[in-house]
Length: 363
Picture 1 (cartoon, helix red, strand yellow):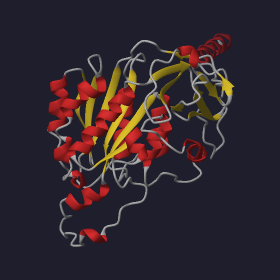
Picture 2: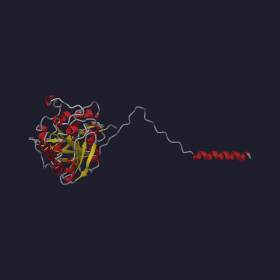
Picture 3: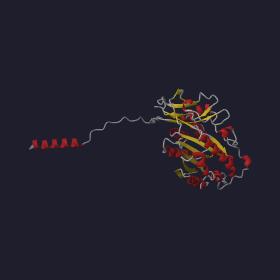
Picture 4: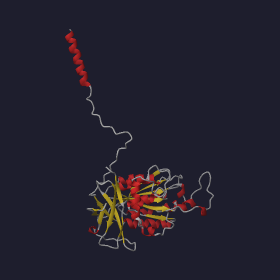
């Protein structure tokens, strides 16, 4: 009897041990306080290039073999597209109370988008921003839909979430096909108020998505003069007491605005490297300059309907004079900032405008 009980107990214990799951292999734990590294790899870099002559005019008709590109001083095997690449464009328009005086001029430029910027094969989406980021029109090739979406923009709150709008527009462009040129056009002030996204993060997103950023800056001085008074206490200071902010073009006829060039590239690169290292808050007061120079785009200004239309026309001329260079870096394992340099050895008078580089996270 005792033998039967022992056998029964042994059988029960054996069955219980078989029902238990095998012990899991313990995974090594990250030490507390250590932030996991994020590794970014770059498979293909797209570099839109504009070539100017000594007088600032566009140089067209160059052949692919006339270009050279260097990535961190290492010459790359490049492909220069000889066929037209259709454009995917996001237009982001400032629609806060500060822009109230200039919005009537902006409302009228919708009909220029298709003929001057995107062409017959292009597409555009429209967003407006104040304290909200509103998608007024998803990507469409219908000129009437683009015109209507721009026409119905009206002034909202006093907030100006410009960087958040850039982040949202970049996300939209990332969904477009890689065989399209991705362009971001911002019409608004150069400052940002109350965005959650940091300029550094927005620029990295623009670069990784191969987006070229263009800006038509609203005159902050004109906006201040024409904005509705704040509630409940109006600003009774006379216009003469409002000084022009630093870094804002005083007129739309400067060299940068006339030719659309991004002067000071050599001086810009060290500041860009410092920004990616997150050493200090560079470009805090003018993130638009960071986005345009950091992606190889251009910055213009306007204070009236005529100067706005002129700026749109110049951007269109630049977009349709671009050469698109693509390459897979032969040094993509190098972490940190990769400086891009493009030249045309056969044209000594030529000056190129392209994105200055991109950032690869350390492994």
